Image (cartoon, rainbow, N blue to C red; front, side):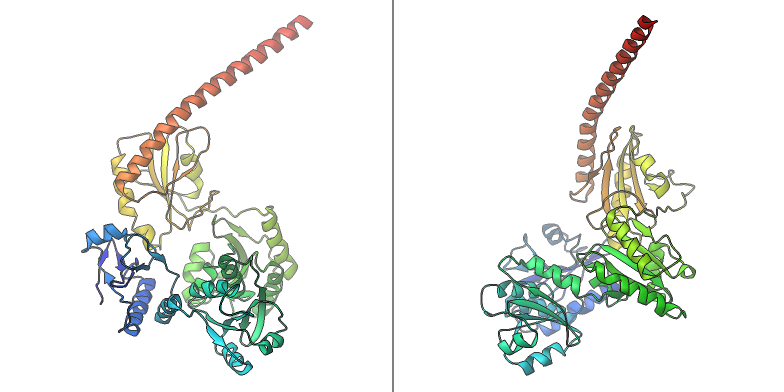
Length: 484
């Protein structure tokens, strides 16, 4: 059963009947098209099962949309036993097979059981990367963490064994999880009673990437979903004569930083990587170069050297981890009409000057121009600006987070909303409420009332400080006069 719906260029997928799955995507984007194809493919494979998949048009089914709060991500939602208020979180699916695998693993069993060496050899050779659990008890105990983790990673193949011949082959004596790439073991984790599902998922996410992973359509999601948020990125032309030398040096520097920094290579000669070059403002002629970025702060660091050998890259990464590297600050050119519209357009050069103006309350949207989620918020932001248009002490603004650097921590996905109260103190308040006009206005007014009281205290403290300083100066002047 499939129902199609869209509002604000957002499409919502809902599984009805026993299970309900909700997808919030832009129907014209490549991600939306991929998800739609995967969703329909999964629906066809699940015909006759207890799981029914469907797509809901939120522009028509407004009552249901509001009830499910389905105008915002996540892209897919699973509802069980008619419970519309507590959807099960869904991972990012790469294909229809991923969706089906995830649903089947939830129902159990979540991993195949291997009984002999031949079966094990076939399994580890079946795909580029597989996860093999070696447990003395495959029904209960430590293995339960393995089964739980496998449900959350439907794009990887999981199998489990208690066969001692397989234990001996990999020289393993304790309960363990083994990552095998092209039949070669790459990393092993000993599982104890202290091992959590999150810890196992983190181990797999870190080590499923190669030491240097080339950025492309197949690897992008694995790179961005890594729990390691520091990324060293080599921009290089693979057709250049010196490519192998530069790549080898970069690869050699990666090993000491496994688990601390993800090493990524971007081929500047690949047309499909244009968005990456645009995001980091890298020109093809500038390659080879190395940038380091933290996915939380989005502050970028540029390797300050034309020499790209292993010691130089290692020193650069270490200086970043030690906190001594200097960020590369960048800013768009300030538009001529930046302050002539209800929503003010900021750039890196004037962000802090406006945000920390002690006489104005600034509410700023940090957005990504290519993000459908960001663009879908623009109409509401315009509406909010119109609401406060007559208030000279209130500024509603936005800034392109991909083209301007700033020293602010952003822990959530974009668009991120930050309020800067009218204070001398540089206070920053993150908005985490519902994204509608009523709630945002209430939030602004509440924070402005709070800031008004704090501002009065600031002025009182300032007055007392000035009086104290004058008293000290007067006392010193009197003492100096008496000495004369």
